[in-house]
Length: 417
Image (cartoon, rainbow, N blue to C red):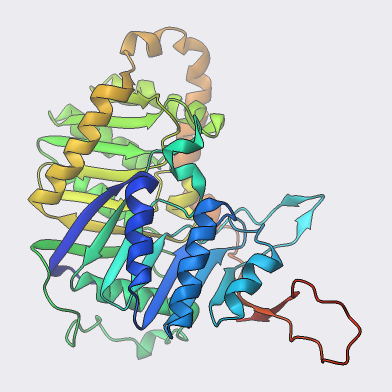
């Protein structure tokens, strides 16, 4: 499914759970017809419980409610938690669930990593924030720094159509049945603002590198500034080369990466790339207040993006992702102000002298990493992608009144789709 640029959108940047969760829950509380929600992680903590209550209330008011979670990120949902929603009509779909081996989840690749909410086809949310309490500051030192956005306007139609496609896949046409391009006529929603926006997705079929291509084009076109804040920074060779080339031609390039990572390997991998980038003028700043989970970027004074895609092999070559690409001076300025404040208050700039010192022992490893990144897409393409499953979770029928079985939390039946 390919989308087109939409004019006339109203956008609101949301930082962390403190801004994101109240906006989403308030919107769901006012839902009249429909709630579509996709998330990588849904936990049974205070955030998950509040979301559960909001979805139940929406379903009891008569709204159609569909929730899609990932079979790896949300594998620990209990039957009781699910049953409380399904018994009032909430449909819960699990993307590609997998069996555990010795208590470990092995279905780590090709995950549904998107975070999308669409309410009544009129308001949408997209970004990197999961439905879990670790996106709130009171979680403690491990609370995540992240971003999302509230969207109104014609691009919501594309988000709505895309979210519906997830739970009701359309059988793909043969090549001779496809139109040369998707027609953009028809109702796509009233204009609500002035921002131009484009929904860009990544899958393992027809859109394998769409998000990466938009990043590459923005980096190549940059003439003044480039600012990228990304949690898991281990991009392909093409992205690294274009970032370096941008700095060489005089663009001020700043990267905000993890200084206090939730996964130490993310910091180790990114640091193997520092010398390659910094020797040509790229500024590397590490966010040190808490783990960085954001996936945002801006170029010059108009282009920006917010979404679920990291700049690493999982997001760029394996996972299902969704980003919104924006062309709007006002939103670009707002995002820049937020990120610049982050740089000034909670980041440390990594000096080139520190990276050069001791580089002799890192050089062989960096050489291997560069060649790995250069050929990673081809390596992944050698392995066939398994066919993902979408299972709809339903509570088992209540036992007959004469049954001697004592009341208990309903077990789950899974309807494979």
